[in-house]
Amino acid sequence: MIKTILFDFGDVFLNLDKRAPERQLSNLTSFTNLEKIKHINLDYEQGFIDSDEFLSHYRNQFPELANSEVKKIWNSMLIDFPKYRLDFIEQLAEKNKFKLILLSNTNDWHIAWVQENFKDYKRFENCFDAFYLSHEMGMRKPNPEIFDYVLNQHNLNAEETLFIDDTSQNTKAAGEIGMHTWNIDPKTEDVIELFSQKSKLF
Image (cartoon, rainbow, N blue to C red; front, side, top):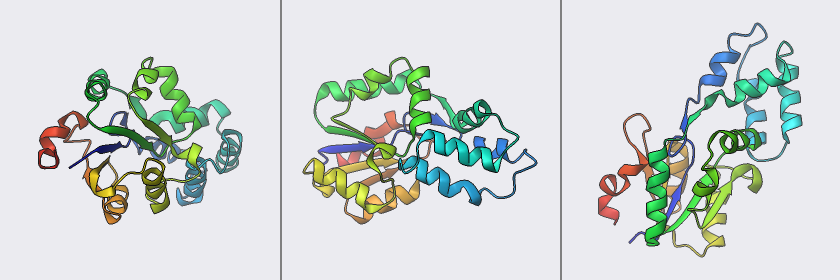
């Protein structure tokens, strides 16, 4: 029986275009290989570097970009947050039947963008019993320690926890420690279909 639902944020509640920054960067004359900056992105998501350091790395790699252009390109993957998904999670929280936890790989710039462009962000955050952001934790999915941390912090049983994420590596890692998972496809599925898609768990 499921007692806790652990949600990802991007492409579960917040619509993303994950390839948008790469498309824009690939048009620059200085673009050679995305692998050169991928580790910088991962460091930023884990809070190992701050926004100024992140910006400096990008400016070194793409000197033709102004500071504001780097930020705009980085945030270009963020699309919108449909109101009906906020309604869904608020209604679920009001029922108080499950412990609700958010666990997101993210960073300062992305969260700042959401807070600025989604006026109901605080209402969304208040739906959850806990709200975990990778850059504040110093770890990220799919590393097993981030799942162990959340389970231990709340004395959760993995077999009584459902984890919802759009990235297969993340749901695979959660499944390996005993969680139920839903590797949601944002192109064909929606989190509001939770209780029809996973009816057997409830």
